[in-house]
Image (cartoon, rainbow, N blue to C red; front, side):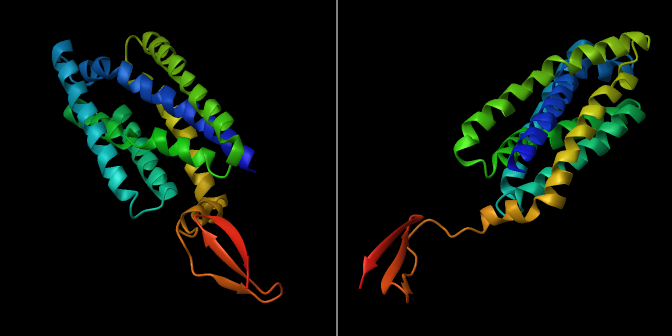
Amino acid sequence: SKQYTLFFGVVAQFCYVGAQVAYAGYFINYVSWVRPGTSHATGANLLAGAQGCFAVGRFIASGMLKFVKPRLVLMGFLTGVVVFACLVIGLKGNGGIAAIFLVLFFESCVFPLIFTLSLRGLGRHSKRGASFIVAAVSGGALFPPVLGAVADALDGNTQKAFFIPLIGFVIAITFPIYLNIFKRKTLDGWTEKVKVGIDEPTKDIETGSINEKTGGTTHMEKL
């Protein structure tokens, strides 16, 4: 089942990264469409502001991870991404621009959380698993040209074409749904493990020895 989780994570990462890159690549076209008359220079400034929201979201998510389980943070942020990605398609003017800002805000922590949660429990296979997850960024080469082709087919309507990255986000959110339903106990077990350090020695009655855990390694000492 660990392998299934990994490959589910690879698919989610592929679709998520593709959608994220599509959003960044067509951000200026989008704001020019939903607010006619917006220059490309203004669009570039808005993109910089949205990327600032992305950075703020990353710091907020990092702080939340000290108190909230990663699977719940991922679920919450990806839910925000999907909700506002729907509004991006439906709103005009400043409402649409605010929605796309919030999409970038909630995107902030998704990539690293999918990465780490996909690798939980793989042990010595973690390096190989990580290589699969890294390869999944190739989704960024697929979604933008598809979005562009759809926008051209819709007479340049970039806003309607943004349903392409929405599909990617919807596929990606099935991963944290899966984790929270089927992998909750396994993932939470990692956070509840004994802290690294010296624990109180416990006496083994059968062997008459002391079992002492130091830094996760067991040493047996005869009484």
